[in-house]
Image (cartoon, rainbow, N blue to C red; front, side, top):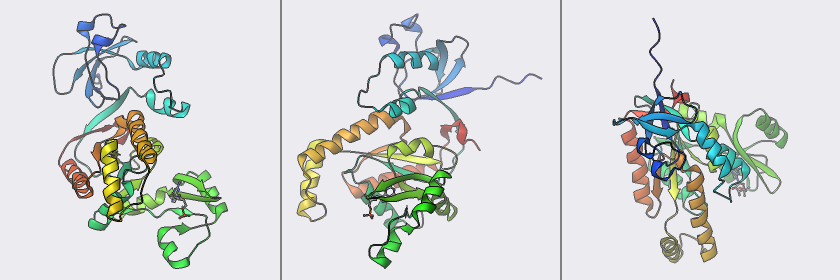
Length: 307
Ligand code: 5GP
């Protein structure tokens, strides 16, 4: 018996409008899509033009193939402020193959955002308000303890040589050097939290998303978007008055807004949820209810996650 042809579904990681495409043989035959849409690929025989339809239904239309888009993107490098590494890893992911799976538990809750948008406060809010559901890791450092006891709570202390060897062996999710000392998060620390029945909150650089979006970490990725500059400025002012935050200059606030926009442009297709943290309580409830809803819904996930 011949196998039925395998059904291929993809999640689109960019926007496409045939009306603006001067390469498409027939604009009317094209299928418009937006980043995040799920399409079924009906025919992939042509190297340049695939036939696809929306999973919600409707008729099939032409979309550019992965190869055609790669060729096109190689010509127009739009984001001049992207490092070559960012460009390689993120710009060329046009279609990601996905599969529909029954509800399942995410292992990690990944908070992404520019410095200054309040990732730390949101993480603490989740940990303090709901310790039976959320946990987090204790980072390792090679630094000598500064003031004994209190510090042993914040870091797991280790030697530089041990840490270097473990980093080389791939045991760390991420690491960095500060003031001559190494700091980093071990993969095993994440697994310990998950095995204890909690979702592990990670507050990491967006570069770590590439490693995290695997079946090992099954992440739910939340982007904490910066509010508009004027709103951020007003929040900063009232925070300072209430003694909650230190005064930040307009230039610093502007940097937060710009960095946030850049992260969204480069990594936006990886986000499961985008929220603005202009009200901590509301942001907290938003994340909780989104995770709650996920428990009862079938989900489209990267095919590599299918267990
Ligand atoms: P301190 O030694 O004063 O506690 O921290 C110094 C620096 O190490 C801080 O700027 C902090 O952001 C950084 N750091 C703390 N934990 C980690 C970590 O897990 N990974 C990385 N890359 N840096 C960290």
